[in-house]
Image (cartoon, rainbow, N blue to C red; front, top):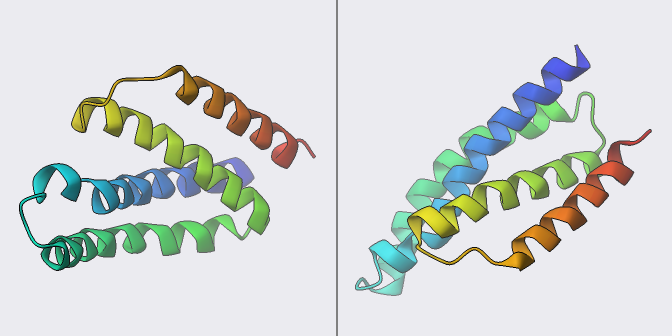
Length: 115
């Protein structure tokens, strides 16, 4: 039961973070020629979908995870979504710093979930 809730929470957070990443950063590539407030309005439209996944994910996850565990899980998912987005969509080079930050998050996950 707990693993099913963790899986569903993670899946919803992956979807939420995908929309969040696009809302936060895609305007740098797609709407760079638009005024900032137009980009902000378009980003808010994308961010609505982020919240449609994030709110149920956190409510579901909070039934078995602590608030701190939810936050660490969300940060791991954020970096896992952001790295491919940066490389594939934004055409940014992959850096060794991604590996180091990922290892730090893995350590955070270990300490947060070890009990």
